[in-house]
Amino acid sequence: MTSLKIIKNYINGEFVDSENYFDDISPVDGTLVAKVSEADEIIVDNAVQAAKNALHGEWGAMSQKDRSEMLNKVADEIEQRFDDFVAAEIADTGKAHAQVKNIDIPRGAANFRFFADLAASQNEQSFKMDTPDGKGATNIIVNKPIGVVSVISPWNLPLLLMTWKVAPVLAVGNTVVVKPSEETPSTATLLAEVMDTVGMPKGVFNLLHGFGPNSAGEFMVANKDVDAITFTGESSTGSTIMKNAAVGLKPVSFELGGKNAAIIFADADFDAALAGTVRSAFSNCGQVCLCSERVYVERAIFDKFVSALKEKAEAIKIGRPEDDADMGPLISKEHKDKVLGYFSLALEEGATVITGGSVPEFGDERDNGAFIKPTIWTGLSEEARIIKEEIFGPVCHISPFDQEDEVIAKANDSEYGLAAAIWTTDMDKANRVARQMEVGICWVNDWFLRDLRTPFGGVKLSGIGREGGIHSLEFYSEPLTICIKE
Ligand code: NAD
Image (cartoon, rainbow, N blue to C red; front, side):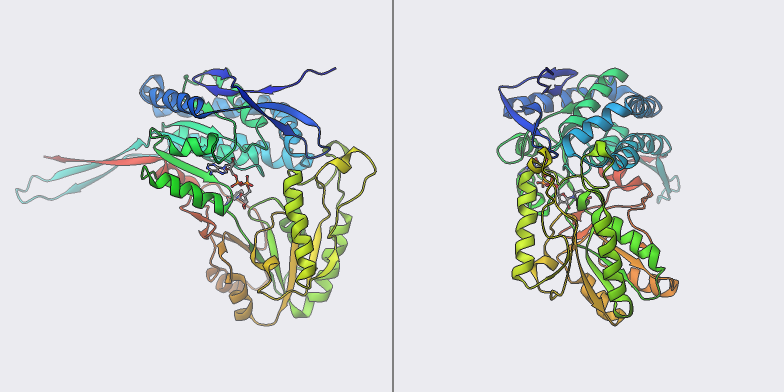
């Protein structure tokens, strides 16, 4: 018999229990993965105080070179324990092996390397100025850490998205309190073990488990000694966090929801556009903020594209990660219920179901999981809620279009503004259309290709601010100008 796994908080270099536990459930078959120790307000405050104290100790005195070396060791150790990280991510999410091995965990390690090296390559700026006495003055810009940063992450790419923020936070000398989603506590806990192994000074990295409202998430926002908040998750959660952060005038960086358009012109490389749209609609069971839930196809190739995408969707192998499935379950039964609600709504709104729209039946314990079929709809008006609201599942609606201006207007007619994908062989058109997209990132003839130096984030309900490359370092630093009169 295997013993019950207990997942703990990590504060000031110690793994810490609490009085309350919640269940970490596998979405593959509904079995218990672990019991997770929920941080209460006192535990959160202990973590914040540890982080505050660590700002000025060994960590604060460390040179940039040594700090960057420490973060490169974190990356090395993630790679050393690669299989543990893969297993932990899969246990919490049921994701396909290929997704976790090729994207989630490698990117987790890469985030530490990238920001360690970027921070080490920064120089202080200085500006000489003239003065009336002719002697002049020199201005030196010193970028200081912002302080204790609360990092609050979602469940869809747990390690990847958490390290995307933790790495730059630490690279510029801050300390962190981090909370993974209550659905995915495991890889964050392995990361705490890695921090321990590489000798990260106590209190620099603190991990808290729990929920949002009236739990660890809310306490991490409200705590008066937290200096900045960085959050990835739903737009409505971002709004609540912003209200709570306003009390202490804390700076926020938000990466929020999306309702992204893919635009496929008749002159596109058909097979590339098809393969790209299979990825952008169904990757990670549609649970990527960048996924295309609205697909617009030029009328000349509309019917051909719909039937080709249907064929591809029906060929996706759904199942357990260890059975080499292409697609795992949704994250939880609650999320499955939400997506099924949209399946009913699509019918009420008059959609044609091209494929899917239901739950697969396995006849085994997977029926206790959160599996769902890849689903394609057509026939809805642009006003339908299916077209307007983020569903966050393996779904897309496909509409035909006739004119370039028409499709630009439709793509931009959204409260969200995260990403778009354009498929065409006409580069003038690509350039013209891409520049009119009201989003933070627009791909041409690809999807989810990321250069970590570039700004990442969204407009409208999709976020506040940009992270990535120097943009992350800037958010997590406070510039101090020193003006020296000669
Ligand atoms: P969520 O907003 O429900 O939860 C995210 C995190 O916030 C969790 O850790 C949760 O415990 C915490 N939280 C919830 N309420 C809180 C509160 N009041 N105060 C503090 N913390 C609180 O999001 P989710 O369901 O985990 O993730 C899916 C969402 O994330 C989707 O909307 C998706 O588009 C978005 N997302 C965006 C990006 C991006 O880069 N823009 C990336 C990934 C996911």
